[in-house]
Length: 308
Image (cartoon, rainbow, N blue to C red; front, side, top):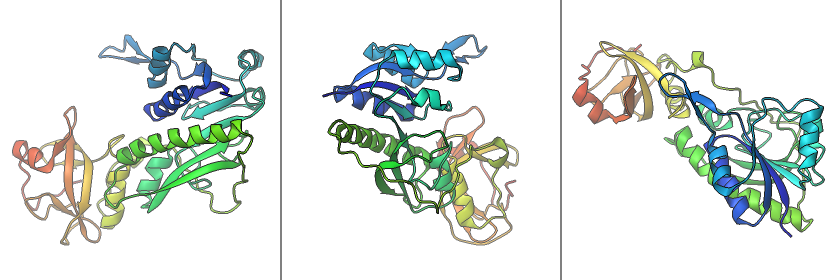
């Protein structure tokens, strides 16, 4: 029998899960998401979240509370009469009174192999760390940060040049499929939960602006992982002589050695602390992403220039 669900999510990553749950016949009685954000040149327009737009398309009631703390929020959640909650990148901490009303529990799609990369930015951190694999975990939520028992996982390999954006798009589809399978097992009373191990936990802290600048003194692999881990957003960046700030969105291993940051050839191979990387895609401030060839046609960069 289909479940009666409350769905809680905000960004594009959560959309496939909402769509798949609706397609599987579950009754989604409410969607919780973040409030619309100001947009446009003057910030006068309010833009609903991707999940709000999708919920409106399905005709599902949308709720955008600033906080879920307090008796009123808990009472409103109980009033939905839902069997379970599904949470995907919601962005608001769920206190115990919000988790308690669901007889079957609240289940989260988390974009890592828990307990590795608990926290806000698991996709970015996995790529930045040079992990060879990651995956998706379905977890039954508790009060702490991503510490609840796990129900299902699916592993994927991270290719050597894969960006966070590419991994994000892969995992959002896998997460949706895995959640549908988990809820099917929950309906049959066959879903098994496993406590997370006490060892191996790491934390995926939110990416801060002050860590986005490229440090060319690092070995090439570290620079490469940094660039692809922050691509396409927020973007790793450097200063180009005569151009200003430029985001580096795609790189690969280059050949050669030299002073860190020095351009070694006419194909945008740049020396690092050891080894070199080749820049494949760049973006000027306010511009669109360009291949290295397109970028060089509009902005010739001389060999021996040093990027900072």
